[in-house]
Amino acid sequence: MLEEFKKFALRGNVVDLAIGVIIGAAFGKIVDSLVGDIFMPIIGAVTGGLDFSNYYTSLSGTVASGAAYLDAKKQGAVLGWGNFITVAINFVIIAFVLFLVIRGMNRLKLHTEKAAAVPADVQLLTEIRDLLSERASPSR
Image 1 (tube, one colour):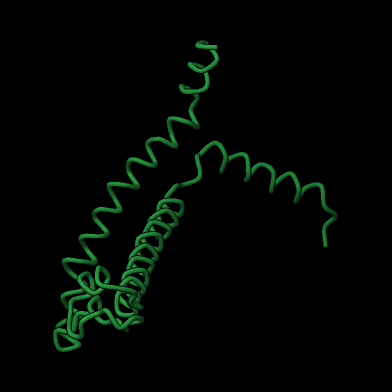
Image 2: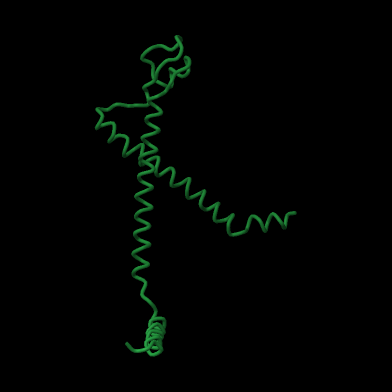
């Protein structure tokens, strides 16, 4: 059983998946910082310094008006629609940043594929094939 587990754990797919998860977690921290430290302050400045995360609607009478969202959650049931808007904006920003990254990678990949020249032997064989096909076809 130990040998079978060793074979499973050391297969390429499992190792690749583990590396992907670790890189994904690190990339997630970078994206969280980008959104929280770069984009959200800009959005806050554009909207006049509004912090959407503290907007809520009280669903019970035990919540004191004007309390911060986290304090209001402790006092009773609240509908945190402002926090939802913040999370939705974060999602849109993250999706757009990932779109730009993937778009750039695809362009780079396409550029490198175009830059890859046809090897000389393949080009020579193609020319020979074309000449032979011209000889074999009846003249017009």
